[in-house]
Image 1 (cartoon, one colour):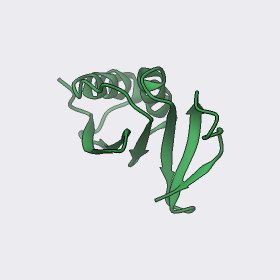
Image 2 (cartoon, helix red, strand yellow):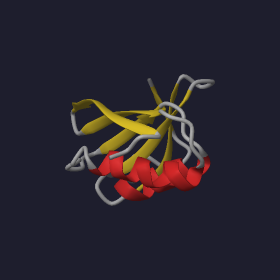
Image 3 (cartoon, one colour):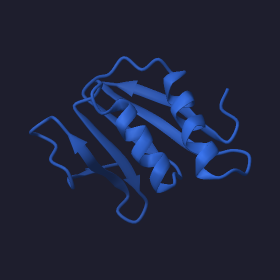
Image 4 (cartoon, one colour):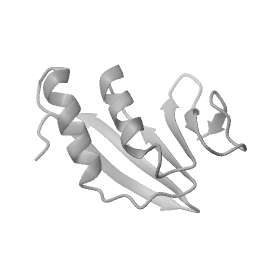
Length: 104
């Protein structure tokens, strides 16, 4: 059971899954990364057109979560508050190139 990190399903709409990320109890990445992987696995995501991550994540957590879902979705994007949109980080879909901005 994940204690140091939470991953919550926000919505699924038109093949795009929205997921919220958050740190829970204080821990190091050595503990947080496995907790994050367990938390995303517990959602039993089926995949789809794309996935949008929003919320804080350390670099190791972000990499682990992206890897966990990269082959389930056509693209993986994360929210950038400065740009007020989702930046595509991984894509198997030619319509969404890495670096593309998807408005929130």
